[in-house]
Amino acid sequence: MNRVIKETFNSLVVAVWFMFLTFPIMAVKVNTVEKVITWRLINVVYVGICAFVLSFFWHYLMKKRLKKKDDENTWQNLTALKLKQQKKLMPLLAAVVIAAAIAFPLVFSGYQVSVVTTALMYVVLGLGLNIEVGLAGLLDLGYVAFYAVGAYTYALLYHHFGISFWIALPLGAILAAIFGVLLGLPVLRLRGDYLAIVTLGFAEIIRLVLNNWSSFSMGPSGIADIAQPSVLGKTLTLKQSSDFLYYIMIVLVILTIFVVGRLRNSRIGRAWIAMREDETACRSMGINITRAKLTAFALGATWAGMMGCVFAAKTTFVNPASFTFWESIIILSIVVLGGMGSIAGVILGAFILILLPEYLQSISQIRMLIFGACMVLMMVFRPQGIISGIRQHYRWKENT
Image: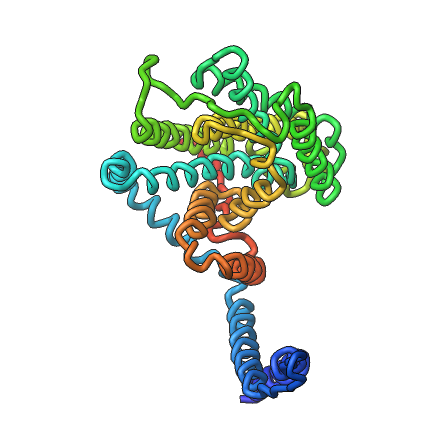
């Protein structure tokens, strides 16, 4: 009872303080032409009521969070345990999901297919960045630079030599991996904020080079008329190209999930996780930190390079404005919101952050406000993401 009275009193203090702060803005309206002052005190009352309710709700959520702090992943662990117990249902569930994905372009319009294709691209980008940030603990704010490398690789190769998408796709991945190693070499001793600043600078260097080296990249005008993927040299219509690119993305998403899942449970994956937890202890255990970091940068950049080629083929146009810092923030938000180190979480985060803004264009004026508020609430009440990565447990079985 005393706690309720205390929270009510605190909420009243917050409400009064907000009424005081917003009084000049919400209560007074000055007409400078007619020199008339209009008092709108009812607006201050509304501010006070909203502040009181939100403050009381906030205290309730904080109290609930403290109670669940010890078993915050209970529902997630129980779900994972049930899925393991129902192993026979997993192939059936996977078959239903794949069948729905294949039938999607046959049911929905080209616009819907294009939107989902974009979401699938960000799924792959999120899983690629998840290798660096989620598994290896390397805060990379310049991930969009590898995305740009892949896109310009295909754009320039097609523009100058007429090289097809299928040849440019692996070349873009390889070139992005090389750039990943080039970025990783000078930042081997950096961690945390310092690493983030350097990677951010790397992305800006790439963007400025593309923007100002006009003889190489066509500058701000960009490169247009890039060919979309074809089948055995056959020209496809716009709808066929859109559907074909969608199916390519389905294959690439499945391939990415398989590879990232295998990497996470491999020797190098466990080295990344150990490095993320404690780099000093990891080094003392004999793990080669240099190799672990460079492979994380290279393998993470590989997927960005591939998606850059797909992006160039999808839009048939690239310019430096497509690879700004905002793109890196979106991809990083996908990883943080979904859950660092979690494949399922990153997939869910990509669909939420890409599809929701697309379908909420009717409230475009406040959607970024809603987006920011959701991110703040996530950081306060579930900082590990929607679906956090589940730590693998290994048991030694003695031979009987």
